[in-house]
Length: 188
Image (cartoon, rainbow, N blue to C red):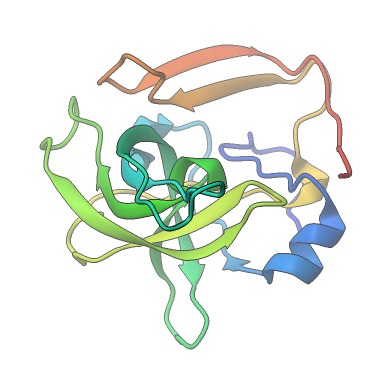
């Protein structure tokens, strides 16, 4: 059940196809904890992925190891088999695809530049979503998790939005403001 549409949405997640999210990838119990209109940069982390893609044409040969990075949002979840909620990182599945070693780093302008080991807890490539847990319990201490909006509170066309993350070529957290120009659900 969603609260009225009065508070701004800090993190909006819409699966690419609802049937894929429900049937192919399971569900996550996410609770809204964020406050209204706060600066979300402290809850956005940079993800470092050391990956090795499979060699489909020559599976007996190792492919080169590559490095990539992306962004993730700290949220609160109740993981399967656990009774207590904990902090986790929500990101895109393509950010952690083919991972061999994952690390997260909090905003270097607000926290130390230390990197923390992470692992994939859940992934849904159809919806391009992944959930990471950080091995060090103190890694995300002091971070106020972002709210995950339910589907009825997603932004509409012409709504003002902020995009927060780590674009390619940057080490500092970046914020871009704009308006939603189009909303589409694509079925594969």
